[in-house]
Image 1 (spheres, rainbow, N blue to C red):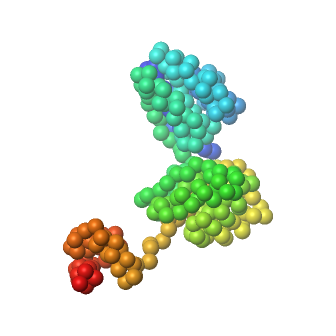
Image 2 (image 1 turned 90 degrees about the vertical axis):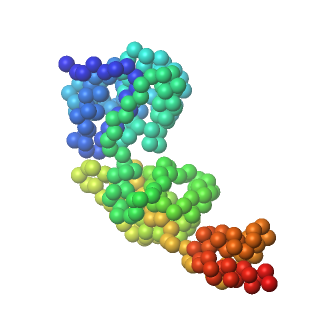
Image 3 (image 1 turned 60 degrees about the horizontal axis):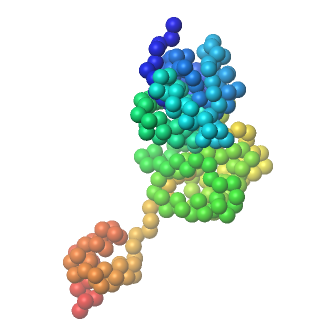
Length: 277
């Protein structure tokens, strides 16, 4: 007998490769759910075979989500509906957030069953700073759109995490090197599987490595944050002070520029008085 679940929506993280990563709680929810909304029923069927059961599945993906979602939300009033993706944590680079949003709007209980996530797993393998990171999903495939997306995040002071496919990997790494500079990076693939691999190097080195032999499957790319900016010059300080003095008295102008450029406030105040004189 499986546990009787309270009606509502259950967001269930599933393995990204190694089926042994399925948690006991996730197994219990999948076996006890009245219905499981799946990205691809063929993929999730393999998971149910691992559990020795046949789950009641309903496809829920980009192409049918708008049509299927109202019915799923209505059923949550009396049934336990589980949501899974093909691998990893639902809502990470898939349309699941709309189902969560509508379930909450309808007053249904929403419960998460945390577990594997390729982005987080790759971040732990990469050996790059983890105190701040930005998940980018998949970058656009077209060259100009991809370059524009990279330019938007070039100055973000955080480690970058993104997904990519094997055939596009080298071009993506080269575009990142061009738009961000040749930062340190890591390419993680086959995470949690027998041939798990995480290759590190500069973006240019990695782009060259995969140009002739693109790997198969989906890949996670992790890119180091930008280096510390160069210290402000005397000319930078004078320009900032001149602008601030058009709006503020000398003491406040010096304080503003000191905070902005990381310079000594007393020295800036003395320079501001010189400039005013």
